[in-house]
Image 1: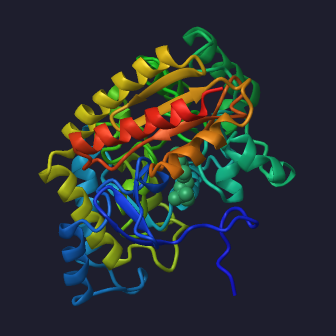
Image 2: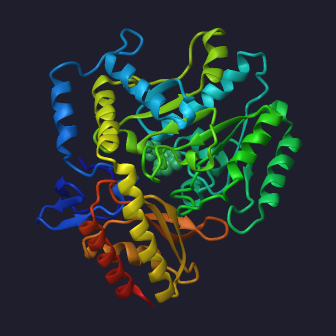
Image 3: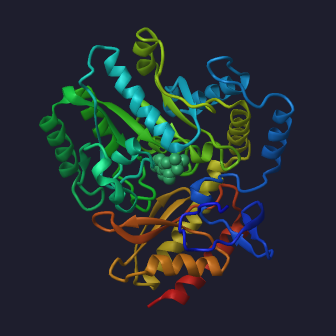
Length: 421
Ligand SMILES: Cc1ncc(COP(=O)(O)O)c(C=O)c1O
């Protein structure tokens, strides 16, 4: 008779309503949503244009099963994602319901891509230790996130995970590790390399250097390995561009999006792919063996389309960059004031702050203090092996205005002051 929430022994406050960047509890206390939930609600809450699109779609068509009917709503969303995709290369979208499912589908598409060409032995994936790609056994096998992984270690696939650090190891060392791993396993066994362009929950907005992805892309091409970009957190405006891979001007073969696609209004995610990837499958078995009962749900697709249209019409990428710039410069200032802040990084409205990992319990204390002060921030791990629970992500809705940004920063500073050792 109870809804299971993350901590079984904790009693969670109930949210009663939400509007714009605020969530209200049952006593009417407002919380500034400084993390967009789990970096999801890019348009904030109760956005009138999205609510009205949902209401009119409800009167029209809610659900059809994908092997019986297509829908105009799913077609239009695929068209929009193609138009927004890096260099307009992702011609096809496969709709699912969560970021994890988008990654699982990406893995299957990659496996099938090779199978259909008689290369069934290409079934290994290479990813990075500091990463989080989802909670199912397949997606978790790609993820190093220690806290989410540790209980299931023995049940996970033994995919190779790269350990070179994106910040402290030289680029040469990072490329060298990648090629060494490829050579060791043999490219004929490797289906794809999977990476979050900017590492979120598993890296506190850890960002590779400026020519990292171009070089990794080149290595993938040389060894005939596909490149899967996990843009579940970074995609669709969060970092101030439609796709974070634009910062590296690199086109991945397959891209997973989620979170900001439904923006909290509908559970929807997607696996995007280029023509090159779809072609052998289309003319081979003619079927991607993935999908779910709710895949391509017309109500979710119509909602997501409206979300993307609002981000575009209201110029929210520019807002993400300008408000993100204000937040980053204040955080940088705070870093010089509070010595227990060790890192400030991020792009657009995906900002990471790491605390000194030697000060135990700082992350939890800070998140709790922010909550008391009416501000929501999101936990992330960091430190040298990505196992320190010492980071937070600040990722408010892309609609945040200057006054709200100021309030967010005041609450943040107040909370820092109150928890400082
Ligand atoms: C980069 C990344 N990939 C995949 C996922 C999994 O998405 P979901 O929680 O919607 O299954 C997440 C969720 O945090 C994520 O940040």
